[in-house]
Image (cartoon, rainbow, N blue to C red):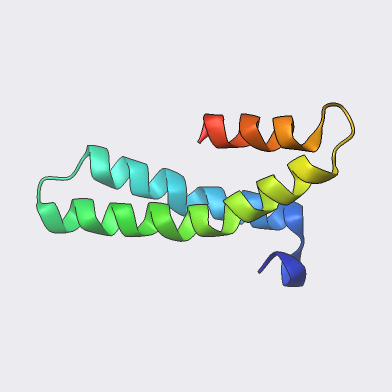
Length: 75
């Protein structure tokens, strides 16, 4: 997805299902709604995390290993 629409768009579009999924999980009156929320979270994160790790490896502010560890800790 990132190769087709770019990193910035992937991050922006990927956060929408994550936020929607978290809201569904928090407000879930039934288990099926919560499971659907977790599905949305997984679909969003599966696109966002590779972009974040790739960008962390390319930045020049800190060593790549430390930057990826920061991303992992944030997750």
